[in-house]
Image: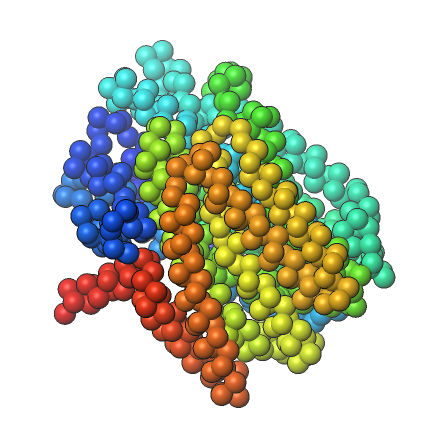
Length: 607
């Protein structure tokens, strides 16, 4: 995802036509605004047929029309373009992630060396979840959204004078966004540097805690010290990503994992013969630096920080930034740490199994979770919209947006689940079976991947449902409670199943635990934060799950008929989606009905 944001349509918006939240409210296009806020849900209302929105139109059909000449584009069309750009970069990052895993599998297979690297990789995985994907975003996107709201209010009160510009005395004005940066970024960097240094010094203890069953932990210690720098670099990356997304600049944040994977792949290819698996660990450090550089040019354009009175602004902002107080920070950190601890539990249990068990789990999880990653890009793009709606007190708009996100994300992840269920052995053979990765590794990894697939919907829902909980910036402990409960279920099931079923038992425990968390979050969101219709959402996802099971079974049966893995997988990429959508249509799934109606209408219009 190594796009610097230059020359793209989404990135040109702040320069040519400022994002809606950066413009005075009285300057917003009056014709486009109601359409942007009236986003119809994909779920049918009471008395409406499945797939219909207000007035009998489908939700997907009700996309905003292009704005008239001279007006800024509507919110819906902008989000569609941003989601499309993010999707392209997400897919590119996923492909590079597979190349990265293929390189590690080719040179190190499923061995003690690959296990040592994966233990060290626990550090950047935890850091990425806490500092890029969830924790930093859940804290800072609402904070920046509130700062942008205050900036818009101040500009409207001043008759449109740009925030942060020099006043009559030549001093910079009190820009809430710049105040927020001055109050938080320097302190964050100091804390992260201290954390990285402590992790490097305590690497032997960390390895003993994470994997007490390793026969030779020194290699894992060396790799851990190399990857410890990500505590700092991922924190800065996550901060930049949150700031840019709040400004509706999505492409540079989406490009960070492209840069990250390029760094790992390059170092592995160049230095594997000299450094062994330590080359991949060094690649993690190099790739994390590239993540910062990917976003820096766009950030400096949108948030010029070289201003006088920065310290004074920081002191004032520290007193006016309640969204980043300890009462809000603690539940977010606890939720994110509990979520990532699912992986810690898996590797702790797998370290007691024969060599290669951790690697089989890793390869299976990375591939199986690709549909989940693609589905969550929808929520990543729309999270600033939900946060802004909550900041404005527009709970109805937030409800419609969340329900639509859950429906679309569920459809994407369950379609991917059906492909994984049907063609797991073929996927692993095509992607990894070469070099040190042999047929036995393929069979073991494919078995685990099919078990992981049972929890993909749960992973997707946890990622999608957690964002609305933290969108208001108020302290809420329910997500941490739900995630903690799921973690306890994972631990209990893992200890019960690992001895008898090995790595398959660990994967089963993961699926059961994350599904428990997803169910609790779905039940709790409507009564605590956003008044979603939890029962309607559950019924809609149930129809999609039924379609996924039928499509997965069809793929499983058809996969045996074609002996060549490549041809079998190519046929499955046509068969499984066809069965999925036909079954969804038969079950009257609102999302499938709406999507097929939209495709039919576009095809008819095109003719």
